[in-house]
View 1: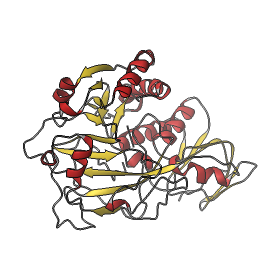
View 2: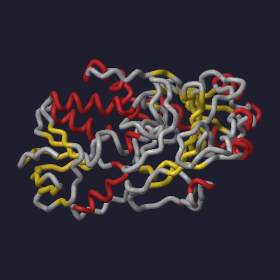
View 3: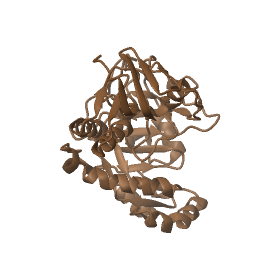
View 4: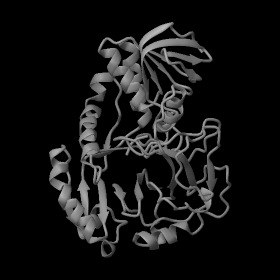
Length: 376
């Protein structure tokens, strides 16, 4: 660890997308800024996402408006930071299976458009054309938002970090915060620094960091699971990011399919690989290793419950998959994610000591579990 300066105007705690962006914008505005990250940059929430940027957030026009502004910034990112994000348009499809979901969309469609979101209602047949894995007999209609892109979240972190440094910000990695005093002194193993203002950008650990300053921050976390399948036997072409009302979401990952589940219900347990986990308000642990388990026939029951055509579309994992192996078709439990995650994908912290790595995706695709890389 390099020595800390004695004082700074602003101290940012957390080196993910939000933290490095904050440091970049402050430094470019002429504010003396220091950033502290307890691991590597992008090794927390920003490093374990589905790698999707989107503008449409159903039922939340405030977040959609923020996301639309963020999307404009990402399109201009290379010019500002010198880092090419390699954005690949994939689109975002939201399936409706109940009349009230259709009514909710129609009620908020004008507000979404006013927020800058390009979204439209499409028929069930059109939804099946956009995503061949959708059985049009099981849905009423869908919302289609073309402004959704596959990206590498760690490239965002790298770009903002480089721009922040060029603007004069000082970034310290491997520097965990151990205490915060009322007078603005922040303690770390590398020494103590006094800050006029402290910005907490610690994601799911924000409550833990805020508690050091005597502040109660009600940030909740919850478990999320992700699965990378084998390539569908018949092939299905490019699959957009697709959200089912159950919380199931899928997207293309090269020639394979990335499958994830969103926020669990209050009393929902998430299958054999979850260990009966339920939503929790406590901070996640970064010392717990990631777990891996075979899925067996899990895709079959998922298909029956959510209306995907059949288990053949998403092949089950081989029964010989080892628990510690990054084998194809292996289901992995993601650590808890921050319920306050904003416009860049579902955020989740990555385990600090061991990361299970799925097979490498094509160069343009971020690794969903372990990029010393969160966005959708």
